[in-house]
Every structure is written in structure tokens, then in C-alpha cells.
Length: 274
Image (cartoon, rainbow, N blue to C red; front, side, top):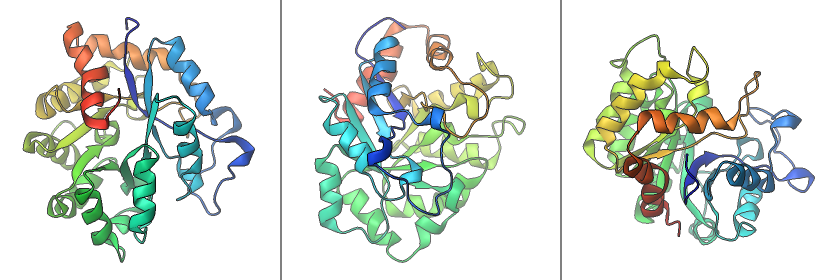
């Protein structure tokens, strides 16, 4: 990628000993995977990118302070996606927005439909819609299909992590991925072309993901796709490098004008980067 204004729209940042992990978390990252905001900005600099969308890390539970502190110290280079309980107050939700948050993440892979159906979930989804935030959903296989009726009824702006993490052995028609494409064609959703290493069965350069990426771009159009690295590559045993994730962009989109949309124009319009 040529050095220019560009956004990595999916990464996690950790805060060091001043930000302890919550109890009873789904995972605790290996020490080598606990990249700080300073580390992330250095990675962006090294690869010619300028901005990032930090997704609150699951080990902190609903404590978003590590992410918010990273945004505050970034000089405008970072914005965030928060985790929030269904019972979050309007005041606390507004404080997240004031701190640079542009969406709330719900995790089908870790919790099933719980976050979508627990008491207060309807109210939270309504507030996400009313505040024009994104509902960012992490899912894999057919999980998005199960949640689709609730998401559609809520009227929220949807953003899906890692192009839905399809099972590449099952083809484009598998229910979860087909549901993702339906959301794309409906015109009120965004998909992240990210996390290739989480679904590829081949490894770099991840060519086995190309049919899925192409289908996602066709359904969502070039106006509603963004790219993300998923740095610092938590919950994987093998070493993952940043460069091969970024290198895929030129293969998908040979035209630099298309890459400009993916890497800068879309994140500016969708997330408010300047």
C-alpha cells in the first residue's frame, strides 16, 4: 500500500497493569498479544497508515477505559467500538460517544443470542439506533442468520466483523454468509474485510478467502466496506504478521481509487475520521 491517509478499521488495544482484566472473562491474551495503543500507532506508522478503529477488548468486560484512554491520547488518530451492558444508562452511553465511540459490539460467537434477548436488550438496541451508532456484530458460521430477525426489527445500522467468519468448506450459500449478503444488498449495513487468518485454511496470502471477499464487496458495494487487520492477533497460536493482512487489499482492489474508498473515504464518512 502506498503511504497515504488510511484507516485500520479493526484492532484491539490493551492498557497495561493500570487496566486490569475483568473476572470470568472468555479469554486472557498471551503477554505477547497485549499490544498497547502506542504499539498500535507504531504499527500503523510502519505500514503507512494513519488512523485506527479500536474495538474494546473482551478481557476487560464492560470496562472500556483502556480503549477510551487510547483514543484520548491518540491526537485524533483513533476512534472506538465499545462493549456495553443492556442496562447502560443514557448518561454513560453519551459519555462513550463523547469519548470517541462510534458503535457498540455484541458477540454472537461468545454469548449466542444472550446479548440480543436479555432484559433491556430492546432498549439498548433502540438507543443505538436513535444515537446513530453502529451495532457491530461478531459472529461465525450460521450465527448471523439466527440473530437476523432481531437485528432487522431493531432498525440499527449493522456492521459485521470479519465478513461473518464463514466456514470456507461450505460455500457462499451457507446460511450465515447468505444472511450477510442479504444485509449488504438491503443497503443499511457495513462489512469489515478483516480477520482473514481466522477463516483461511491456507494461510498467507489467504487466496481461499477471495470468493467470499468478492461476494461481500458486490453485495455491500464499495461504499459500505472497510478493511481491518484484527491486530494484535489474539487467540491464535501461530505468529500472524501485519503486512500479509494489508497486502491482500491490492489483490482485491487493483484500482487505487477503489482502495482509497476502502481505506479512507468510507471510514471518514462512516466513523467521522478527519
